[in-house]
Each structure stands twice: as structure tokens, then as C-alpha cells.
Image (cartoon, rainbow, N blue to C red):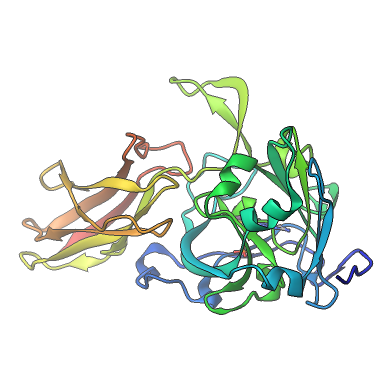
Length: 337
Ligand SMILES: Nc1nc2c(c(=O)[nH]1)N[C@H]1C(S)=C(S)[C@@H](COP(=O)(O)O)O[C@H]1N2
Ligand SMILES: [Mo]
């Protein structure tokens, strides 16, 4: 086993970098092309090579270990597809941004790697560190750090080295990133170089100050509690028709879109303002953490402006709120001509 020296990775660019996703009418493909996938780098892009990369695992484990890329590549390669969603700005946690994509990943299973490190009974969280460093919102950061409950690692969490069938691009975390399907993208640490098993949550700014939502009560007041931005709440977008599209009177077509949640979606309803009714949509059965297509037949009966909306509900009864949350209902105003 090679143990390269850990030096701070070169950052290029050494500033925040974002690529916003396609607008809902452009989300026509089931799998998002890599060039259309969101990019969010708080500190810039860490430039790493496979040769210089290593992952050290420490903390509450029996066997401290450092893996090089060949060590990781020896674990069974797992392929899966999942939604990959940025939850939006940490400064505006209740604002819907719909930064959503659906991509395929390949890599080693985190539990396979952890099985060899043998977490102790006191380990409850996995802290993951990126090789990126720099400044975000006036705070100096050495290694973007996120956490996840160890019990959540037991399912489908990957140490991924491919996106959409190709090695990760630098901005997506080359050579290895964490992927937590079903959790918001912020948890999927890029340029992953260290994991620490810990009895408690990570204490860095990205798990305490940012991406830790104020908990609201039923009337929308802050309770003083906070909740980690982990699980993806139920959400849906209407792909067609597009906002402000002119749709033809009396011509039958579809209203369709995508719905997703960490827990799969069991029901989508579509609202049409001409009859002021929510109708159940046809919905694809869930496939892992991929998004699910929904559709309803649509034949506009009156000329003039019309409002459409979709709302998703999970099996446990979580439903998209009307407004005021990042997963608020997506509405589309069209013109019947
Ligand atoms: N090391 C590191 N990992 C990171 C980030 C980051 O700034 N640094 N940004 C996070 C956020 S907020 C999101 S939404 C996703 C975006 O992943 P992508 O740029 O590959 O689409 O990466 C997450 N992982
Ligand atoms: Mo994000």
C-alpha cells in the first residue's frame, strides 16, 4: 500500500464555482448529460491526480487505514442511478430552487470499505472531508466536511469514481467523491480524502452554521431547534407544458414531469385551474433513488390564461407544501389559444 504525503490540494479556480441546472422544460431526458449537471464548489475546484490521491479512515475504528486508488478499485464496482439535487443556497434555506438532475454513478460501497476498517460500537457518524480549502463567506475552511449517520451508510452510499459512465470530472470531485443517494447533494463530499468515524456530529461550518435548517412550528415560527439538511423532501416539477407556453384549445396532450424524494414517491396529483381540481397522475413505480415520471392527459377547454401545478406525496404521507419551503409546489402558467 502506497501512502502519499498529504499536502493541501491546488485550487483552480480558487473561488466559488456554480453551474445552475437546466430549467424544468429542458429536463426532458431521464438521465442528465454531464455537461448539464449542476456544479457547486464553495471554495473552488481541488486539482488532484489518481496517483497522489489517498483516503485515510480514522476515529472510532479498530483498524486505521489509508487506501490508494488501486485499493479502492479492488472493491466490487457498484453502479446506480439517483437524483442529484442541490438544496439551494445555505443562506436561503426555504427558497425553492429546483436544482435537480438524475445521473448514474459507479464506485465502491462505503460499507464494504468500512467493514475492513471495523467501526467500534461507539461510532455513530461518518465525517467526510474534501481536499478543497479556501474561504467561504468570510470563513476560512481547510477541507469541506460533512457528516452522515453510520446507519445510513448501510444501504447504497458510494465512494464514487464515475459519473455517467466516465471518470469524474475535476469539478465533480475527481478522482473520488462520496455519493449519498437520497440525501441533498451538499452531503456528497467531492475530492474525498479523509473519513473519521465519530460518536457525534461534525463541528465544521458546513454542518453547524450552514446546511442546518431552523426547525419551524406549525405556524411557521422558528422553534430554536435545527435539523441537518440530509434527506430529500418530496418534490416534483412539470416539464411540459413550459411556463408561458401557448397551448392549443381542444387539442389533447400531456402534462408531465418528474417526482422524487429520499423515500420514493407514491402519488402525484396535478392541478388545473380551469376546473379548479387536483387529479391523480399516472406515476412510474420507484426505481432506487431515481426520479419517477408522472403524467396526466390534458385537453384545455377554454381560451385564456391557465395555471397548472403538481404535488408529490410519499408512502409515509409526506406531501409537498404550497410555499415557504425548498420543496414547495411547482406551478406553471400557460395561455390557451
Ligand atoms: N468537497 C466539496 N464537496 C462538495 C461541495 C464543496 O463545495 N466541496 N459542494 C456540495 C454541494 S452544496 C453540492 S450541491 C454538491 C454538488 O455536486 P456537483 O458539483 O458534483 O454537482 O457537491 C457537494 N460536495
Ligand atoms: Mo448544494
